[in-house]
Image 1 (tube, helix red, strand yellow):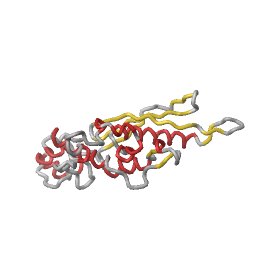
Image 2: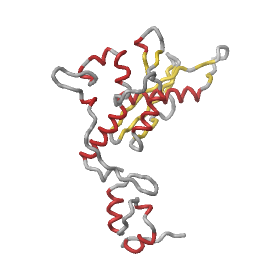
Image 3: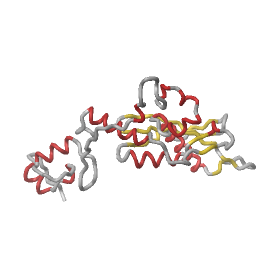
Image 4: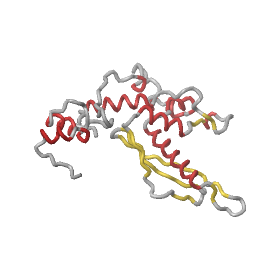
Length: 221
């Protein structure tokens, strides 16, 4: 999908996306499982989902990797795992949900909702590997005081890397018809068939392909 980007351009695009993803959430996003215990601070899954969807654009994917939820009898929980990918970087997350049962029959209530809750928790766990939400939770986490976590300035180092906005911008070309990212193959094909509109190979008009593509095969109607 990104064959038309150089290694430097790909790294710059990744830095720009991560900068947006790890920016502080709006005030009030952090919630507390126990209002009297600051260590119970957490960010619900929906802000993570919205942040990734809006700031990573088309450059992310989420895939559940467990064929079916894993049941933990000792805690009466189900576990779901999934992989979050940002460009070419991936992180696996684990999510858990305690099963809600009827007190008399012990049958499970709202099983599908529990599975969805575990999947959402897995996405939140994977997002943590990319540093999403770290700045918001830093005041409530001891590990955040360590300069190695990248949230505080090391002595004599000036501003931390996480606080610097990448200055270089790159242009990722999209098909004007379907919106897909143009690959190097698409760009080469546009030159081959002498088509100047910025579209992917599939959206080049058939008459243009037939005229200039030496390997053109007419579609069977």
